[in-house]
Length: 136
Image (cartoon, rainbow, N blue to C red; front, side, top):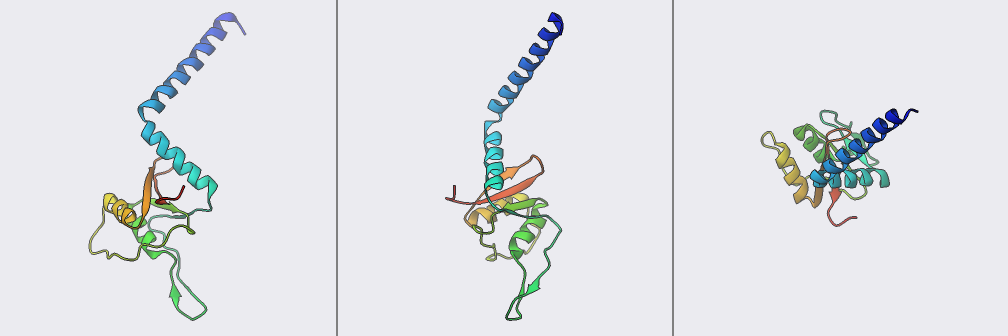
């Protein structure tokens, strides 16, 4: 590689690394939330409820119709975003009624009232990551 090309390559790499560092510092809260959300998803067996896709109900041993976590599915549809959660830590949100269209902020509030800390993930896709408060 010629001396001039090597300098240009090293300069471009240094400029790119500097830009990434500046953006990481400027948006540190968002970066921290994304790292925490990705760590949560990689270290646990998570499930995802996608908006407008309802999981079919099934009959249990006693013949009772069971729909797993209908509240989270409904909240996902209202927020128009996926909700990612750990089913072993998360109880369904059944203590509320939907009387009107909920906004995304109201969905976050309802999840917060249910004892969850909600992280807003934007990359690789927009979703809410519901982590049980107090669980690390």
